[in-house]
Image (cartoon, rainbow over all chains, first blue to last red; front, side, top):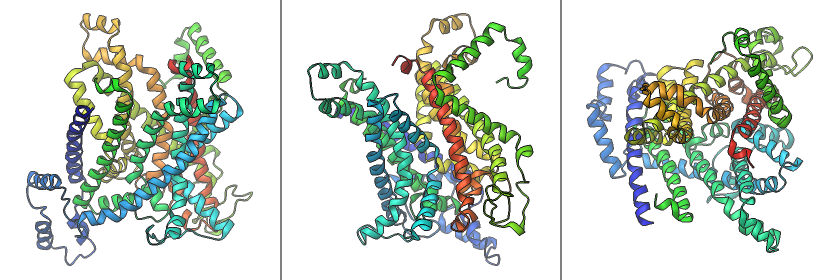
Length: 317
Length: 299
């Protein structure tokens, strides 16, 4: 097992390196640069010498391979440098936003699990009845409804029916949990519905597959209590693919909720992304991409690990 | 795809084949009513988009400052927006944009992905390993950054949005087709083609690609809905289709949120249009998958 883990960890390096190369050069292909953008509003300062001075300060005058090497050496020491736009350390820029995005992702995951597993199991047990059809329609609708629009509808509903708006300024959970939840529960529900749709469909099909296995028939033949068969024998074995889609969706939610964040006025990683690219803040964009890519690759790694742990055949492939 | 002259093509198809197709369509409708409903809604959507200039009661760009933020009424069935533009007409024209983007992205993403996936499986060995790594990199790359970068480099507009949405679809399509193509690679007819001295390109495009049609079609239909959603999201962020082109995502932007309390129809109806279109594509795609995937058919 440890050999398998090491092998998988080593395989992460070329992928991360590829992401680094891709984002580094992609950002430099994008037209416009941070110096021009910064001085764009102040035409009197936008003289060549000022622009050049700023470029020297940011290290943008150096040859591109030097810039790349400097960045890579920093990455090796987990030093992301400072944001080109604000001058603040990138770790600091990211930390608070990451906390918010993470909390939202966790809450959405809880919503999704609470909806998906009961619905998926019921649909599978009552296959081809009206319950099954209803669950399928609910979940297909979940995939079809844009989360950000659902967010708008939630806000509208609260406003029109209860004359109440969720708080629009972020309060950390440890400062005021109620205020914090009152704000984040709505985006969590909007995102969680779509998320649950993915998981419901997976739960249903995994349960259908497992319920046809011989060991379920054996358990039934033994006269085992049906509830026990479902929870111990069926659900447990059907959970692996469900966990996989939940984990992958979770990885996507970190940094992927740009539009929903916009609707709820949340200052999360998604919004930071848009700002960073808009300002051509190379260092910040690069750090964010590396973070999101790392989360994605790492979650994938954990999923593979779970499979390998549960199914010894995979380890020896 | 030969969509150019459907009538002429139909005349060339032998009667027996045409009857078989009709029978298959009939069976699909009978066995999978939900899928048939989805397909019907898709067809209606396409027709509405294509015939927007005939169906729409108003010019989607015509402003009427006498009827700003008007409630739904006999004159404006779904009300008007902050510029007095008819919401229904804008939704009808928006269908054109959505269908165009949806079909173009899905076709581009699934086709390029399928070709890469099949080629990767065919060449195997080092090429396959290299292609897989590159696909991994694109998979790990945040979608929104790719879209932002493409739009920043190329600018906004329908064609660039199509490119921005199609690129992230490619590695996913490649993964799926590759796994199907791995089995096909071992088929005797591929060996035969190689023995006959055909070029790689011909074997990949003519012999292998047609045999991954089932996963290809499944992906294509799944991507249609996803592309429409992605277009709406990008446009909502101001990175997609730009004013004054009527697009559903654009209708939800700006004023729709600002005036949401006094004129909720501005935000509600375009969202319904998006959901209904994607819902129909997914319903159809799901049923198609059940019908085409032999593993599920045996169940």
